[in-house]
Amino acid sequence: MKKKNEYIQNILSNNSKMGDTTFVAFCTSGLEGALANELRKNNYKITYSSSGRIFFTADLKDTPSINTKLKAADRIAILISQFFAETFDELYDNILKSGVKDYVEPNAKITIEKIKVTNSKLSATGAIASVVKKAILDNIKGSNETGPEYPFIIILKDDTVYLLLDTTGNIGLHKRGYRIKASKAPIRETIATGVIILSHWNSEIPLFDPFCGSGTIPIEAAILEVPNISRKYVSENWKILKKEWEIIKKNNGKNIKTENKKIYASDVDCQVINIAKENYNRAKKLFNINTNIDFKCTDFRKLPVFNEPAYVISNLPYGQRIEVDILKEIKILREKFPKGKFYLIHPSEDFEKYFGKATKKFKFQNSGIWTYLYMYY
Image (cartoon, rainbow, N blue to C red; front, side):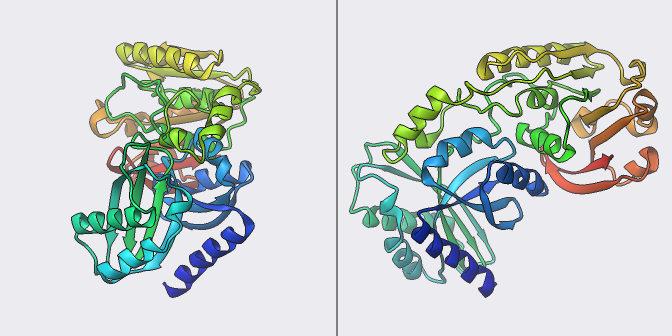
């Protein structure tokens, strides 16, 4: 534990010398690999990773780009400080001498957005919030709190405090803006994207989702490379980032070439297919794309055989979504897509008995249910 803390503290020290900022990207536990793939693709340096969190460095001015481009992240925060604290005095003193004032303007509205405590002597979240806010206000020499909001996240684990400044806001990055209506227990948008990234989908090859529900997986595939500039982010109003946000809102996405992707989505529920179409019509306007998704109301057992290479990526019916025992007939997908690569989400540990031994599988949480991504490639 001591080595890990020293390592992160060294990151903070080195960043101040290099002019870089340490960010923390939050994601669904188990899908860190997808987010790491995105970070590397965008040339960000990963410095540390733990369950549901990836630490990386970037220039502070990249904050708008990071928020709008990363599709597997749930939230982006700046790591302001990291230190040991077993008492409230230690908590206060360390925040008082931290670099908060380098980010927060004098009239800022300070909010404590979230506190998570694990195995630490300080455990009363109400008292922690009160001490942290007082220390922040004292750090910036007080505030009338009439200005833009600066939401802080406090993580206390094994008596180590992580003081984070949330750049996304109370609406997480999974809220793209297109999904007003949804089917039962829909997959979170960031999870859908994470699975697509992990599949290494070649967009020249058709993608099929035979259990598409309200359309999240096919829609996320269609907008994969397009930044989300249409929604609001809390850091848009910050003095230190206002100009950068104005630039990216004006220019971002203009040079993105949307490929002629072949995406097919179907579901046995015709009502939910109509919802999926409505969601995609909104997504096309929000993301300014014209990629076609072929939505059909049909049972997966009635799909025509597709004899070409294909990616089959789907959140299979289970829990609230289940109406029949899908496992007994799931192997039909192999008959429908004889040259397919399959990336299928289902919570059953017996899934491989029905569909065959997976090339790779791992566990993650989806809509409060622990489930697996079974990968066949």
